[in-house]
Image 1: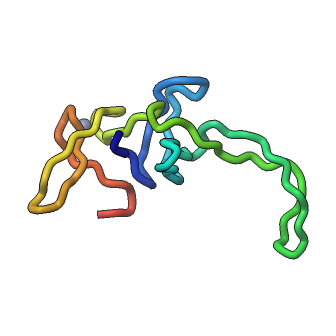
Image 2: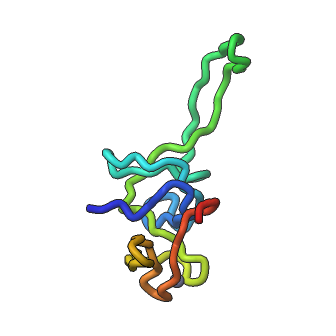
Length: 109
Ligand SMILES: [Zn+2]
């Protein structure tokens, strides 16, 4: 399976407890077929205090990775969509299968 999802993409969760939530991809764990999505699948973590790094102990919330097959890339005009590819010159770009618009991660050209 090829990885259609990249860092900084906007994705929507299509299944599970967080279904319908959208967020930015923080990290792609390609070898595990998982992604970390901002504000999705938050888990509470106990943090040990570390005065040297100015970390106060306690409970912090943190994203945990979800299956890449549970998210869909979001097209800015159509919403969640399947991904196609086209060539612009010799560059392969991802496109929305519904409207054909190129999909690029935010902050990247
Ligand atoms: Zn589209």
